[in-house]
Image (cartoon, rainbow, N blue to C red):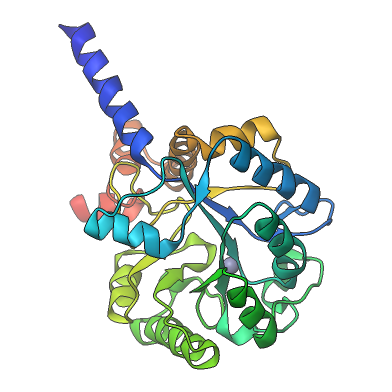
Length: 291
Ligand SMILES: [Zn+2]
């Protein structure tokens, strides 16, 4: 009986992870040694070659939205490629490779940092580089690529008050719509940082869905306003990439969620630690609320 229950449980887990669509998160595509957020063009091309060879098809956030809301069919091996922050090297280095392999990608734009130096990430001593300017964003779109919003100034949204959050979300949307003459319907939370309040304000600002990373996302439930993404870093051997794009990508996300929750809850006693780890948001506030 116990064995049967374990088999059923494993089958249900397999069914769940097998249905999930991998959304890959990139930042820069350039030759910058020792920057974990920058994938070299050679490595990026190897990854695209892998996707092509094994029959993956890139889809858009709109496709994903229609799949979730209207049950529209998707190709047999769908994958979504996203680039955060809108670096110029996405256009210069990634776009020719995406075109070469017949793929599409979505770049997430910070409306105050169009065509500027990447000063918002100075605190990390990041190498200086530029983001795409308006003409380059238009070229990106003309080539069949897509754009989503990444706020006005790239803050940690959950640390702001409601008015500030709404400004970051609504103003980014309207600025990009005015400047690019396209509807901007999808959002990407900076640092993957959001909570229930941010999600509800994102809906209020008129977005249809939003990309997170792993923090605050739910392993078991698909939520259009906390879409889980798998991080593709600079030191990514192809075998690991192949796992991150397969059904097993959910295990990478699951491990990151668990790691984050343990870090948040680690100074609690054993009973409250487990309660905290498996609480709704995975933080001590939930325990305080329930106590
Ligand atoms: Zn960002």
